[in-house]
Image (tube, rainbow, N blue to C red; front, side):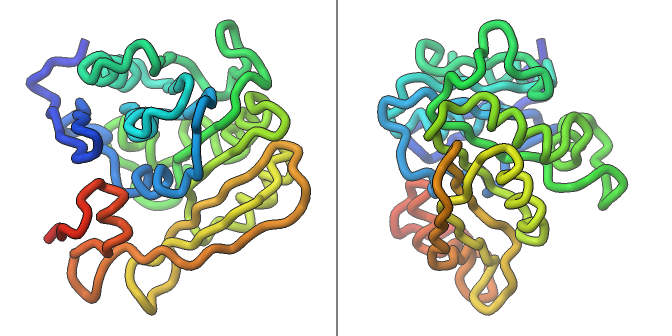
Length: 251
């Protein structure tokens, strides 16, 4: 078990929830918060989060009090254990399960094919050999495709979703063509798309996409999401709302 000396207990500001994170390992970023804000609804749904890391997406979704059940799959043992303790700390162990496993092995015992209404993914963005790989495994595997590339995540999503189920992903805008091509390959028809821009007038850095398993063609491109106001580091009102901060500002 990871020593508490090497961890922090952080307030999520959403629903009074708290999350245990490594001091020097992977720590969640804005991206899963944006993905959670993009997800249209999970009422009475069974949700599977692939590569759940420290459990941030299941934790955010649990604040909605909508899903019937949420399961996170994580290949790194320490991160999976940490995510499990986070769920216990927040009293969510009855509705949120953290499974130690490799998304490349799905389906598997206890996680049957075509069993989930919703699959969510905040996958590693960078291919091996591109960019600077973090010195520790947690951050390296979270950012680079060291334990399964985009195709592995899309294949798992296609296998685990019920027909008509919804798929949600946040990914690099520069790799959008690769993402949409891969989704089509695994019968995840793109239905909604939203570009994420750091500031007004700047190019999109991220893209949020919703797909539907075996869905009909036809996609809506929504209005852009802008993260920061002006030249500073203050979030826009929409992003603050995603954090549950209303009209407050973060400096």
